[in-house]
Amino acid sequence: MDWGFTSDCEQQGRITSISLGGCFVQTPDEIQAREQLYIRLNLAEEHLLRGEVRYHMPEVGFGVMFIDLTIEDQQALETFIASYGQT
Image 1: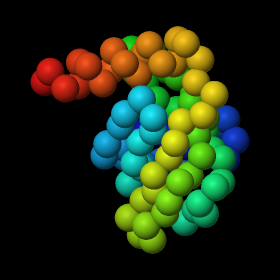
Image 2 (image 1 turned 45 degrees about the vertical axis):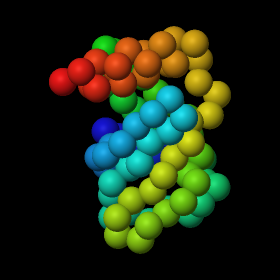
Image 3 (image 1 turned 90 degrees about the vertical axis):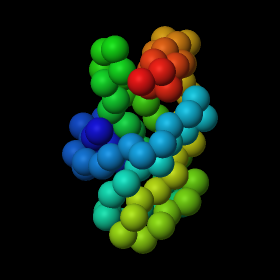
């Protein structure tokens, strides 16, 4: 997945866990708690989500809480999480 401080999402990482409330992004990149960012996910189609960093583990990654999700984003996340759990 791609993430960044602008909608260009210039950084890359790997989501290792996800829920309707947020996700954990595995990346060696440094980031501070409370910073806001964008996350680009390809659910059934591309979604650009906003989030806030809740914690950072140096050289491991960071936890993000999703903010301001649209109804379409929520529905796409629900469908993605449900289908992922069935594999």
